[in-house]
Amino acid sequence: MAGLITPTIGTGIYNITKHAIIALSEALKLELGLIGAKINVLALCPGFAFTKITESDRNRPKDLYHDVTTNSELEHIMKAYQQSIENGISPKDVAEILFHALKGEKLYIPTDHHRYLRRGVKNRMESILQDLQK
Picture (cartoon, rainbow, N blue to C red):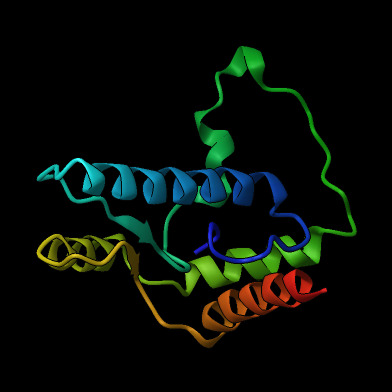
């Protein structure tokens, strides 16, 4: 869902990559449709899923690891994200949702309908539309 909502504090780089994936998926679906391709494009949009994403440093080669301190002002925000991830849906559930979505024609495949995520998409779209009217 990070590609569909406005980035929040501490998520800028992550959201940028997700917005790029959404734009690529939208473009591919449109362009493949124009040529009548028999390939469908899906944009899997998981909410909080119980993964080890907050432990990504475990994959960094030792020779590239440097002691990095985090911004103490962001620590409580990052802990909240980590808690949301720990309470998120399982990767197995994400796979089940994707498997069932493969049979449909939808582009956006959310894995949950959490109010926070729905509100985030709605707020972003309303903000864009409001600025377009000015």
